[in-house]
Length: 141
Image 1: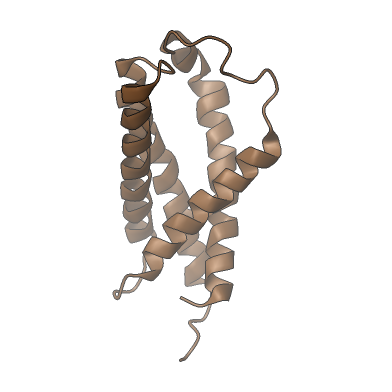
Image 2 (image 1 turned 180 degrees about the vertical axis):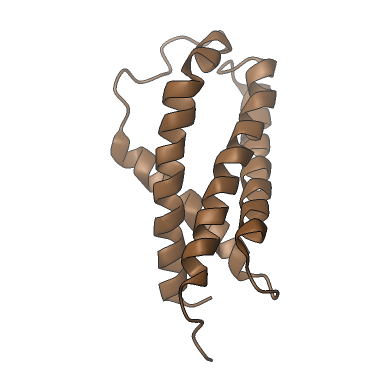
């Protein structure tokens, strides 16, 4: 994958992940996450550091784009959604269960549900990345 395609996928995926993250976690499921937090107190920021969330979303988009670039078959929107969903699920299953094992940030219900919601978010981002990359010409080596 050339740099131009990596940057395009990173931006398309990062923006999608940022927007869907707000819609899913700050609006639709905010009460679920609050009700299923662990016993740790004072860990959530009163005001989020948006710049940090943007950087994390861009990195997440880059990871999904990077994994897509390793495919030898043509990339379709459906394949992009599948890759995004698998990457998102595995990433957050890993992080959530390690954090559950070493902290009191979340209960087990939240630990199980979060990777599933992340699979939905990352799957949508993967579809958007695949659609954006499909519009670009592949560089000849």
